[in-house]
Image (cartoon, rainbow, N blue to C red; front, side):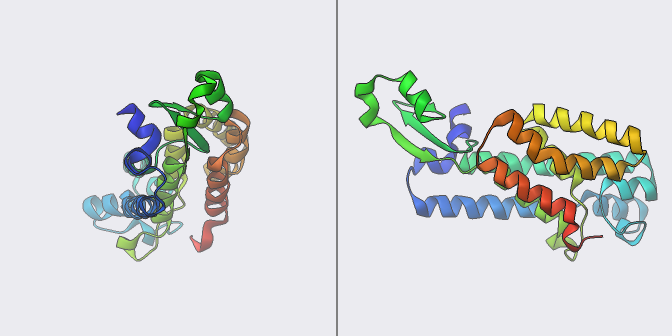
Length: 238
């Protein structure tokens, strides 16, 4: 099972197939988006308070507006729900496309993250049996699709939240150490400014920088930069 999530279904059973990659990519984006469209702020406010949180405060459906409108416990449940749906989307991305972020190699059933690692791990005479694959950063793609769904939920008139909880859980699921550093940065900014929104925005801005510093170059960095731009600019969301 662990090897399956390293390579993903597409790479494990249909190596080198562009068609199956496209199908897998479409499935990850679609499922991730539909999961992300489950806005728990809207669900909780309608189910337990008979209203729509988007009609109050900032007009967003996230945990911050839930806290301002209904209190701490509904906000905590919203944060957890929005985070877990993103975690599920990340899981789907890993299942279909794998969790590698760049070119990787497979030889005699063993996988290697780089060509140098391959040279160190196998005899030179075995290299013709090695097959190279392209890692598609499936976890990041699934999480990014969930974030887009949270911002523009198909179930709720394409009016959602600002994606802070979704982004944090994407980082937590993909790179826990990066998530910890971002959390400490968030706490420091909030302590200094007394504004949660300032901490959230600054944390999202530095996320790609911290990720690149701690993990190195890869396709995941590009996705992280796009996510940061999407969340910070707001893309027309309130």
